Image (tube, rainbow, N blue to C red; front, side, top):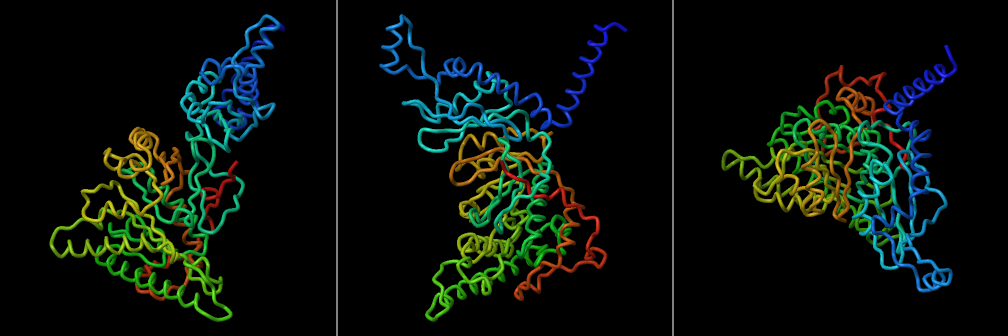
Length: 457
């Protein structure tokens, strides 16, 4: 075999290896090939690309005068890069810019798609950092195509959980103390259940009381029964459980008021988190699996019960944060036609997670008051990508996310292994689910990787 043929064979072998690495190990391919190539492309074409995208400004008077002295024409000035090289990240690179006079972050957001094509990136995200400066984040590949739990651990505060990977490479962190209540919508097979499993498994490892309301006879939340402090599987039981939760909330408010009195140990506070740790009641997270079941009524008695349950849910949503009671309201659809109180309840749920839904009304109900483009993005989620969702909050920010896949068996095993962390809440003892002996035994093979907390960049 000649030398030329050997070179050809080795070249083909190297290409095949790179293709395999790109498909199976995209992070490694990015560090070996993607980052150097994109960095060279950005540095070589930075000024021309900014000029073509309309992101340059005319040169200053001094520069124009200097150019005329040497017989040249002053070129437009692009934004100044604050670093000599773009900083690499696990999924792309970051370039910090100092905007020229007259420019605004909206100019770069409008040109993000043009920058993406010019530099050969999968996506370009713009984030203002401080007045006059912004951050361009180039993503090298579709990070939502295959979301896996990170191998390292992220130190988070109590009631703070990284649940889903965002399309810019960061992780969406569910912080109950910042966003106390959340609405989760998604049609069948949209990935809503996987998001909820990650949430429950993350909370199961913390000193939190988990309360479930699943009026579909408990088919969704029953596998997590070993870790639940209470479970209501019918509308009548849900009505009684909500009564107890309202009583618990009122008792906590009385505790806050008494602790804020006079005396050497008096503490002035307006919520449970200001109380001393030894007297602070345990946080309670209430998960409503299918909220539409609470609104449906077939008779006048059902209507009275529905109005009572909705009123109690609204009270918990309005006042529960200060008492350490938080709501996770889930459903396949949500609209004003559910009945009286639906819109009022929606207004109290600050966090919004919308998976693929079957109607535009549900997407608008979840995200329309946050950003119209977020609702449009939710309606365009393809059915072949379960788990992809649009996350928004009352600040107007939104992003596409995707949760790591977690099977029901793995999630149930985590709840069995953490059943010893169920706190003592006497008011909820009557609603404690009965667990079969074979399900109550801890599993020695419960996986840790599917629910590992990832490190943000």
